[in-house]
Image (cartoon, rainbow, N blue to C red; front, side, top):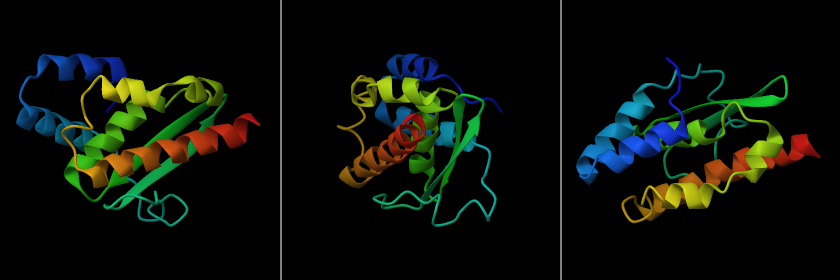
Length: 137
């Protein structure tokens, strides 16, 4: 299944008023992610700083970086899907130019997810940006 674009997710979020419904939407978003293989669920791909287990696979496809991810927690897996929609398919330069904090703030996530989940989002973004920066330099 094709990963929805971040702007489409943001539009859906704006349409949904109830946070219980937004959580269900996030869980559904995570359910759309292709599962990672057991070999991809390794220490190299693990995101440190997340309370739940989170793995990100970052691969090059020409100039772009293609991201895949997974988590053992339903809402966190949805957050993984959200982050992938923001960055996957973009060049390292494009990734470094994205103001993820502003984009995510527009969704009002930080007021509605636990501090541990918020820290996990920050850790996922840092791993993606660090990889993009290493490739760009």
